[in-house]
Length: 149
Image (tube, rainbow, N blue to C red; front, side):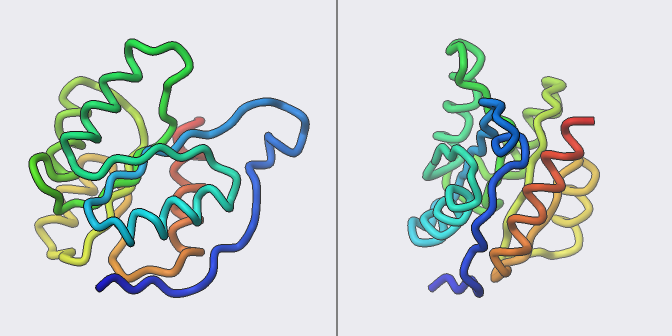
């Protein structure tokens, strides 16, 4: 059973409020359907366009598909670490090996120190489950702001 506290606050990307058509796309990979629903609902409520993957294999497929489909880019990945097939850390390693600089937030209920070190070394933000929705949204905002620089 997954527990996440707090109702998401409603907010939009400031660039959307200034009349631009820029929409930030977040790809959420989580094998727990309820947790995936909670995260995607929070992100959509905050004004993000969200795509979903139910496991690491789907995550990789969607990342690779963005290379071939105009307008299918993803600005940020939010992924569970422990998933069937490819886990979030392996996907992140593959992205970095290919020199993709897309920001990544990893979620885990099993945040041991070696996992934390690996995530940090690969440039990811790590969120421990359960987390507050406001913490998720702050991490997303921070990762996207950092990725813009």
